[in-house]
Image (tube, rainbow, N blue to C red):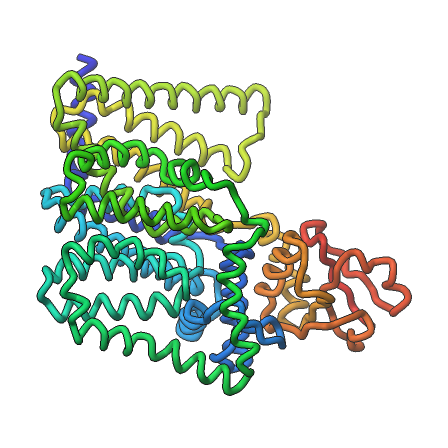
Length: 531
């Protein structure tokens, strides 16, 4: 009777999702959350602010920091954001649109690459795995170069696979993806290029003799070349040469300097639990690592990680470029388990079901603590959101034990993260990065003041502490019109407002300034007015 109950649940609620198209609503919920959005400062807020300056100064040539030209990075992603601002108006969502579009492209290309390499009928499973990978979802909702770069790299690899050593059309696309990627991320694009070289030399060496390939590289590099030449002509070679300091920065000791083992624990953590299945999938290639699939799914990611490890600067977003291959390997590992021997499959189903039961028990322990003891230590999570995520995640996992076939098992297993990420995304956990500051900025008096006045910023030094810099970026992005950068208190004009460091509070009376009473959320900045 109990089994019949579970089987009827599976028949009614699991069977309808055994095709890719039936899971599209979940992907939509993950990629298009409704509700409030707010930026993080580094790096998406910085890019969004530079895009605002492009439009306000009508300067599409130089990256700006208020009135100062700062050639510390290329300007391609700022162009994308500024274009989106021009079409949809300046907002957090508008800034995210380029990344969301590229995220959709990366999902499509991941499924297509899976189909080419593995030729399985359920190739779309790898797409679902990718869109339930934490780091991928996180950067799909950031206005940075990372998601556009990922889609371009996947486009290049997909074109290589489709070319079959003879198609100039696909070689042309490979060249385009290289040139545009270079404009997006400059020298960092060399890492995926060097990583894919072993595959190219063994299976696609004719590309080096293709006129279409070299001509497309030249054509796609033209925007970068013209941008550099025009910038040198207007701002001098010395100013533009600061771009190459990026190489020195990556190889020097900074706050992002990490141990050589950083990526070996960070990547499994940010792609968990799919990293476990991915290792099982990779084991498939240990006996046949010379196959075409092995070079793309095993050799390429390994070389990529090793090259990243050579740099002292290590950040969690650099490995985003290999998440599609982790997803494909996880898909392979998942099928290796369920198509293996019956004892292994049964043991695996029991393990997954027990994990689901333990998660349900844990979520209800949290509920009891919340009701009877008022426990509030849930970080950024609203309790109801956390409870729903854990309970539904555990419920879907527990149902896997009662599935009758492989299709039901896989869908039941995937519905757990699909539902959980959908709820998390619709709760704005990936898009509302600083809700406390956003709520403080929604103060009616502050909105009226910002709409009716130009608010300036007193910035004595470009090298600010992280917290000070982060809050400055967010405050600037909230202004309807970006104010001027002021060097000192004497520069504040009569009847003007300005954000100044709170450390200057003792000097307010000396300059006749009045502090505007606001929430402490704005620390270490305060708003002042010269009457």
